[in-house]
Length: 196
Image (cartoon, rainbow, N blue to C red; front, side):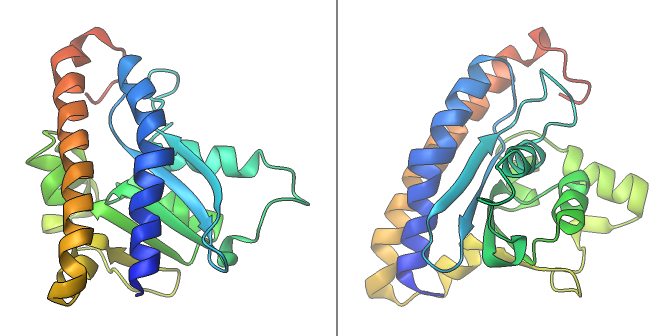
């Protein structure tokens, strides 16, 4: 993967996903967000964030897909011509939504272990284990529907010269998400989300 695309991913988090996430957390929603960008020129198609206080199914990825399909069909790019970008490794609901929507890829910033540990939201791993008998979130990451990619792993593979700038940008984004998560955790008892 090119450094240009990684830079673009981080730019979309900073300028498109996180501003919506700030507003969502203010309303009592979780920190998850997503964006869809075009493969050919990396332009943003749509970005969204979690909206579970309106509907418990409106996870960040699901709500973004909803917004994607609200775009006029003549203006909306084909799913196969898009990159699906997610703040956190998608839960089982969102994995299914990405699959049924026809996207052939997704990239995520934080893996399940971070979602459960750093962000104190264990539901993704728990549901995969309890419902699907999948331990440690070990679903098949490359299958006939899509390929999933960890942005952290891609950053780790960069040469040292390219790595520092990208890592610094990632760390800034990570700090922002941790601060938003702490805010969500301190106020979550006031919201109506079934799985807090």
